[in-house]
Length: 371
Image 1 (cartoon, rainbow, N blue to C red):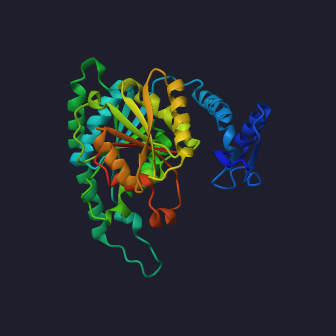
Image 2: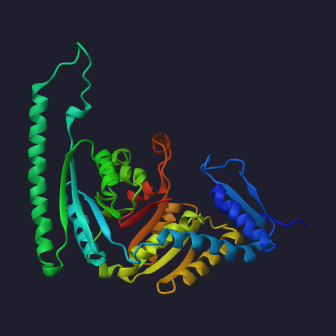
């Protein structure tokens, strides 16, 4: 009977070659798929394939390679997160909820906060065609009026923020304020490239919004395009303080990016003393191979994060969102974390990401990483 061939992992060309060498050195027969597509020429990467019976020998070698990579990434960095938090706001109640979360988190991790607001400027979208373009004086007056409203809104929001900051006494935070004009998602993304925040925290409206909002949400656009982790606080979320967050759900696809995201997530959550539950959603006919991979990931997490309460679970469901939602309710999950990939505008229009769908489907805060 022929041995079944399985894909152990999907890696970059360079890492796949290293892993192949390490596996063969330990007597594990291995071959690569897509290896002719080098230097990241294809988004799917290189498949590292082995015999199914060699999985037990191969997994520790894979873990060792990936863990070494994570240690190199962490070299020179502190164990606890610190730095900058970007807080885009629109002066709404859900922005205040995001601000409450940001203030307490910044205090925990010793970070500064920049409160960021963009007001719409119709002048930006005016196209001055020669001979046919006519300048509208009312447009300039409208811009001035919108700027004045934005300044008033920022001043009110500043009072709210500073009022809470004053209560911290000697532990007051460094809080900065930025007001710009333009298209909100574009300005947030442009500023984040300059500011380089450790985390972006944003509020969003509840799950009862109309479907048309799926296309135009500022928060969804930032999630899809930002290179920085984005923490989303839903309007319907009842915030009672960081000490009330006890269970965090991480959704895994058994991808290489999970190891980096889990490492970042664990550092993010370490000051909060919470339980991390790593789950994979699969149909009720999931294979034994999924169970083996989950068991291997569970062993890796317990070994790597031995000071953190972690475990793994399989969710039997044909619908990802429904499976997650039911699990969240049944297990009293306080927080969801997910890894997503950056994609083109066309692909996002016709096939919205899981993170974007969950944004409008959940009343639970969600932390999104990019692979």
